[in-house]
Amino acid sequence: MDMNTTTRALMLGALLLLPLSSHAFERKDAELAMTEAGTALQTAERADAAPPDMNIAHDMLSNAQAAYDRHHWQESVFFAENARADADLAAARSRQHRAEAATAEIERSVRALRDQTGNGGQP
Amino acid sequence: MKTFRLTALSIAIAMVAGCATVPPGPPPEVVRLQNELDHLHQDPRIGPNAAGELHDADVAVGILATEGRHMDAQAYEHRIYLADRLIGIAEAQGLARFAEVRGADLGTERDRLAVASKDRELNRARATANDAMAIADAEHQRAEMARADLRDLQAQQTQRGLMVTLGDFLFETDRAELKAGATHTLDNLVRALRDDPGATMEISGHTDSTGSREHNLDLSLRRADAVKFYLASNGIDPQRIATQGLGSDYPVASNGTEVGRQQNRRVEVILQTRVVSAR
Image 1 (cartoon, rainbow over the protein chains, first blue to last red):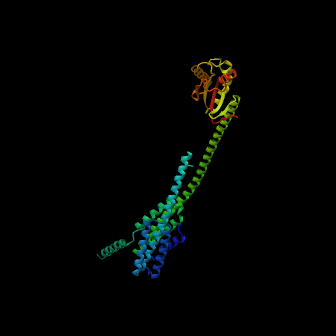
Image 2 (cartoon, helix red, strand yellow; image 1 turned 135 degrees about the vertical axis):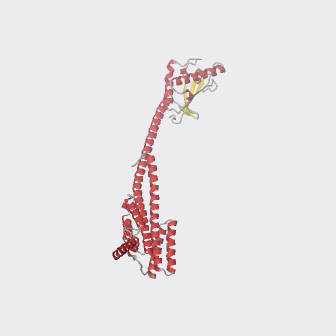
Image 3 (cartoon, helix red, strand yellow; image 1 turned 90 degrees about the vertical axis):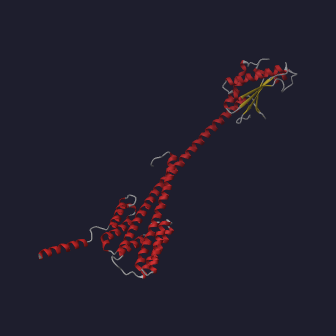
């Protein structure tokens, strides 16, 4: 699974649009950020992301929800965006591990075939 | 004195202003992120395979480098966190694509090797089949030759094997030495055994009832041994040949007439073979 360009754009957008100093975040900002984070977590779980990576994302989203419950909108937005970034990273690492495992398996097959054919070196 | 005070005040103000100035260059956290990014850009596995992700991370770290010191602490820490994740994503995506491309290349190589391996196996199998066919052809030819040899000997199929009866022309009366002209028939037997290396032979000597039984048993055995000796001297492994002397115990005709006695004086050869049957 290649990382969605839209997801990357959203994440970068968050960085670019964040106020340099203080900004009055509202409830809807927190809700939107948490929705986006939830979607990113689901995507990462479908990609079989590793539990340790996913735990970090889940913790961040829980923190976002807790801040939201306290009406700390900015804190909630920040935690939600962190959760989304963690989920995206977990999905990317999952893809990396799958690709490397598959390649290692093919490499073993190639090595075995080279041994069989007496072609121990490179093709 | 007044001038001194003004100078001292100016120096003090300058010192305070100097202390309040923002230090030059990006904050240490940003430097760390920049170094990580440089490392990823230079990694041949990641740089070419994660151009988009690295660009995003570059932009994020660039903002932090230029504006980071002007952000409030919470926003700054948040941006550092996100930039750090963008760098991690760039690294993972780059390595994933590198592995995928390498896996595809190796897959092509694996397919090529598998085809080559199958071709080699096929060629080996063909060579083995050809060898087997050549061996079968040779055996068939030998069998044909052996059949021809046995036809000349007028072999008969019996339950014990192919039986060739050699009449009393092989030996002089009461002698166990082969006559000089008698070996032509035995030469056919030699050829049959050579053409069928798996065949074994049992040679039985028989006499008529003239003389004592003991004498006839001894004479018939010596005659059988004489035939065996001739075959062995012509290259046939003696281990393939068994002999026995049966004397006059198994007549095939009456011993009351000369014709019958002549028929009883004989050497029987039983040939056990898998490839030859008499026709």
